[in-house]
Length: 229
Image (cartoon, helix red, strand yellow):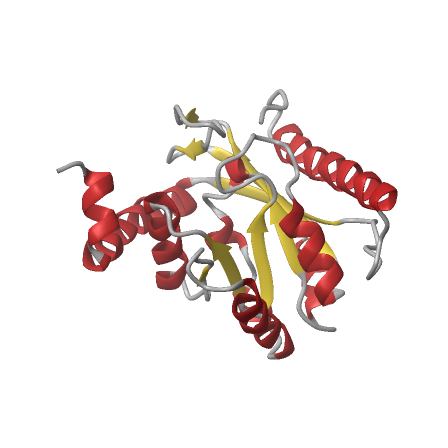
C-alpha cells in the first residue's frame, strides 16, 4: 500500500508524518538567517481584531513558523487530501488551529464554524490557488471569505536561497537548512465590498492576485533571488 493511501486511512500516521515534517521545518527555521517585512504592521492590525491571510500554495511551508502567534491565533483552512492533512497536523502541533474543510460537510455548517472562530478573535488563513490549482490563479474562497467576514486581507510569502522545488502542480518551495531567508506580510489595499457585482469581483480577483505576486516577488528580492512561483 502506498504512503498516500496509508495516510488516507490512518489519522495516527498523519500525526507521525506531520511531526517529522515539523522537526525538519524547525531545523530550517533555526539554521536560516531570516529577514522580514511587515510583521509590525500585521501585529498592529491584529491588535484591532483578526485578519484574513492569503498566500500562493507554493509558499505555504513556513507559515506556522512565521505567524506571530503571540499576537493572535490562526485557523488555517485545508481540504482532506493526504498532503493537506499532514499540513494540518504540522499547524496543529505548532500551536495553530487548522480547520478541515470536508466536502461531506455542508457549506453552511463550515461557514458557521469559520465565522464563530472569527468572532472569537481567530484569524483565518488559506491558499489563494489551492488545493489543486491551477497555480497562481486566484480562486473564489479568498474573495468570498473577505466579503463574508469584512476582515482586512494580508498576503504572505517566504523564500530561501537554499531550496528545491517539488514535482507538483504548484512547484512547492521546499526550504533547505543553513540558508538565507526572507518572509513578508503585506496588507492588501483592496477593500472587498459585501455585494460586488460580477465586473467588480473580476477586478478584485486580478488586483489581489497581482498583490500576492508582488508580495512573493518581494520575499525573493530581499535575498537577491529572481522571482519564482
